[in-house]
Amino acid sequence: MNGTRAGDTARVDGLASARRLIVKVGSALLVDEASGDIRRDWLAALVEDLARCRARGQEVLLVSSGAVAVGRRHLGLVGRTLRLEEKQAAAATGQIRLAHAYLEALARHNLSVAQILLTPDDTEQRDRHLNARATLEQLLALGAVPVINENDTVATAEIRFGDNDRLAARVAQMISADTLVLLSDVDGLYTADPRIDPQAQHLAEIRAITPEIEAMAGHAPRGYSSGGMVTKLAAARIAMAAGCRMVIARGEGLHPLAAIEGGARVTWFIPDAEPATARKRWIAGSVNVTGALIVDDGAVKALARGTSLLPAGVVGVEGTFEQGDAVVVRSGDGRELARGLSAYSSVDARAIAGHRSGEIETILGYRGRDEMIHRDDLVVDGKRL
Image (cartoon, rainbow, N blue to C red):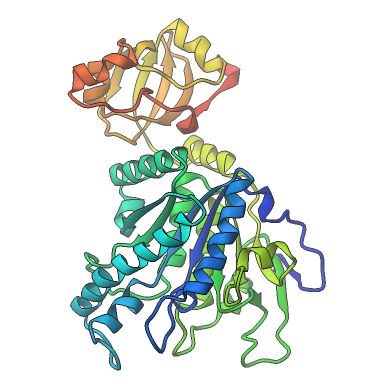
């Protein structure tokens, strides 16, 4: 089963050890079901927790549901199942109110906020994935707190509360986050549904999503705000594959992150590798190579030092590839030195090969990345250097 029951000791560090932390907030926690109003006191307490994380040097992102729940009340769309276009209209109205609430709450702690709306395609299509990743990385570098939501206003598939579980895991995968917190109406995974089975036992730690673990998820009961434990286990599978640990915690009380750090009962999902290791493993072994970059002796020495591959060190480009495609890096004598994800298409790579990074904008007409392959997207074979 690969699970640790509640009576055992979960061998995990607390939230304080996180470097890049994503917190997913469910609609039922943030929005009062009866009034459709945002729970300002709960939000203020959560932001206090986030400010404490930031004060100790952690990067923080929020993935927040709630736009449809807020917007439908203000548009009078209550008491019935909404059509898709009505949900989209509610999301458009509610998103403004959510963003304003986050802006006010974070401003009290002198934290800047940025709103990012994503669709599944933004996390899965190569070029959009890279663009979204670059934006999020830049916001974090500038000290902002990105607040991310599914772009429900343009979704063509059915909008469901709880899809943000998977979105949060996709974002964690995208930006190599090391910790994902799913705040929920339950305190973790049980061997059976505790609402039905009084003998159900809580699991404190999971190290693999086995068929037995999946069977424990059951089905989401009517009236619950999300897809239930099924979507949370799907999120856990995505996060763990990316080297990101995930925790499911009850979020209904004030200061839910402080409660986790204080020893509240939760379920941790622990991957077998760190985010950087998992990403490098994926690049090295799971990506189809579509081209090659030939580099000079200076670039070979730079790669041995663990640096990024710059255009100036590239003397040749083989094959046809797009931005974000996997390529091999070869020396002039044909040795395969590395594999990585190219920041440029083969057409643009040929144009800037051999040039300094400062010349890229003049040559291409736009300012792309300084690196042909960033070191985070590069796996070097040290034996061949």
